[in-house]
Image (cartoon, rainbow, N blue to C red; front, side, top):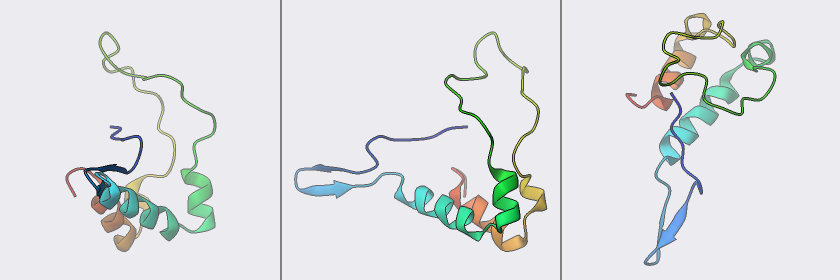
Length: 87
């Protein structure tokens, strides 16, 4: 699932808002916690230019890529949870 906002912050009526700052910061913390070997495994080569699933594409998942959360230590698993929408 992708959740995002652009710009990451904006000012309205003199107040600056950063709606997803908590999740963004949690994700950066999780990424910084990875060892160089884990980070290398986590990086997915290439660029995606379109949504891979959607109407008429149900169940057409790609092969697994990246690093499974199950392979992370308990601290890193908590950082993943902190970055998720259901924290």
